[in-house]
Length: 353
Ligand code: SF4
Image (tube, rainbow, N blue to C red; front, side, top):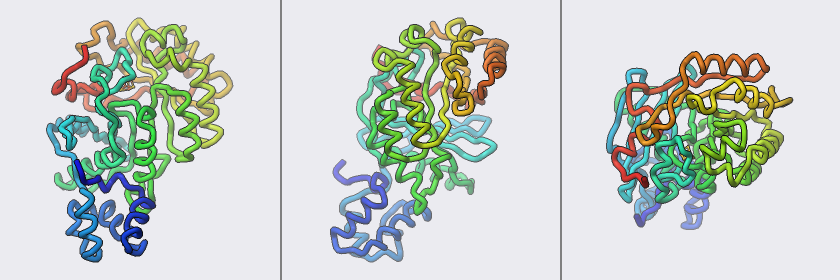
């Protein structure tokens, strides 16, 4: 664990590091180009970089740290990777194919402490935060898989929605986003990056002030504090009202729309009255907020939660639409593989319950 992951350095950090050892700033541009454009996996491949610089980097950094432990490929092209970290912990990363391009869903923590009661990932108590480099490397690992399997496409979108609460690992997530969207490297545009939080309202303000201009999604999942506190314990610390105020700030600061994510749970939060309550919550901000309805993937650890009937989901959608709410039902990816987030890793790990 002694050598640092090079993917964890922003361009400015890499340039400062090289300059500290007497190298010119343009060396950082060369190295960055080899890492993110030419996808070098060894420093020795960096043919036009001075040998002294190669030696410095080789002595202090590694490029790759993740190993593929298991891979599941779905008929719809979704690929779920179980990746092993240097300290042997396992994380999940998912490649999804959309009409608009390829997106990768990255994990930010080993386990999660938020304890959302419907979530397979939440059964795995947090062991540690991922480093920024480990977050970035998940994208590089998927890109490498595409190259290996003779697929030429580049990853165009990133969703920070895998295992973990991104704002509980704030600085690493912010640094990873700066690296991912840097136009000199991976160059994934900010508007193609979405961060999803369970609703740490205080961090939403802090995130807005980072001025990253990425999309923000909130896991709402219930329209009232009473119901939300039942299924998401984070709501006992940050009420729906405090989240909505924080979202106002995020929108004003970034001018980006925000998304409310809503998993439909049979007979629990999927009634017409719940849809009307969401519309009321959004109120006059209809043009600024999207609602994304998500079909639930049942997990055996939470038998009390079931997926809403298809007709019920459609009726919920219709009610929201009639109230003028921008609304969509999320397409499912990888229905024929371990579909729920965290399931693949749970099979190989000890759950806390
Ligand atoms: S839904 Fe997200 S925040 Fe909640 S327990 Fe699962 S991984 Fe953690």
